[in-house]
Image (cartoon, rainbow, N blue to C red):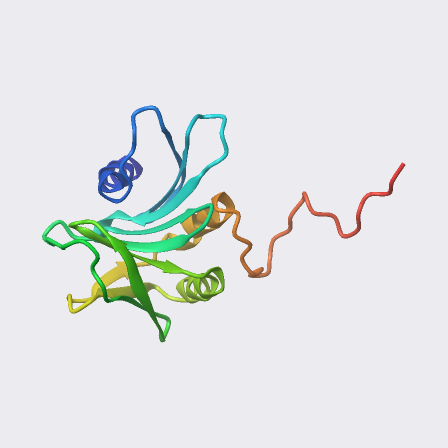
Length: 182
């Protein structure tokens, strides 16, 4: 029952973070703790063109498309003008990541991050139980990370982002040596 609640809240949040047209496909990829990963594609047979990892309790999302990776934070009490400038600052596992705001709506800001820095943030997320995010002068939002590892793995796979190996486990689709040619 908790999964249905998380998916319902995530669906509501998706409308705020990523407006969806009726003929588009949103596919749940993973649900763990309060986190959910979803993929968007034009049709059910097309590969994903947008991947999202969402923590709906804090209106926080990570979005990747074919060109960018973004951190997004929404707050329905905001009334933001166009072209907001400032930073989203993530603090996780003792590291601080100030990210310049690159776009906004009236209730949401987003900051684009390069893949190398994104992977550092994900590594810190994997070693922490929570992180905080500060938008400009607003009070910090504490984001629980329980369940985020499973969802972030689904997100990374969806977005085709190669994360450094965390050790353990095997990949049955990767051989130690290439197959012999015939």
